[in-house]
Image: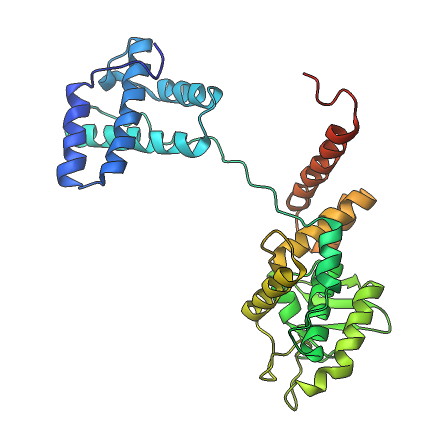
Length: 312
């Protein structure tokens, strides 16, 4: 019997649906989804020749596995199991079952989406674009902002916390002479990382005009038009604007530049451990997501170039 086959719901399920509609007052769409879940339950129980009140945990685990093998998404399986769990909890309150067979059964983990990275030419365009609708001072600041995010793989909070120079209270700073950025990352962990030539040049260009915008005594490297430290929200807003001016076909945010930094570096070097250190990841498994990005790049190259790639 397939999941699509028509089935008459049992008395227990019909009573439970009435309970959900009248007492729980669930929305019509939610009730429809729950009813579909109960159809699945009754079909599975029928195939296993087991009464609904006698379903055991091994049945539920097997059925969840079958749904997964059949291509049902983890999120959909989680909804089905939630409906089943509530049904057996209700049966328990009615003293119709002794234990809930769905308790403790979880849906397969949902695959984490790969972080989006910009193509190299888009990242370069974002850094080098001239915005003739804004002032030269703002252009210098925004270019410095992009070069540091992409060139160093900084988190937006790390960029926000940079000061003009090292001090006891500074969260981070850049040593221009040594071409090194010192930042305070997650968990209050400090790390040092190299700063490339384009970022150093953009930084020097910004520092040459920074005093035209910064308030007296302001320590922040990047400042707003009010003269105070540029906030993470303002950085996101300026980056979004810059991407629009550059004509990029996607929404760009600070973490996308960090992803781009990591992905492009890994594609060129293949040094996962080095990328881990530069990103400040405590665990290399966090960095390993970029190997998937790299494989995606290789797969595209293969599909585009290999004479047998399109043949199945």
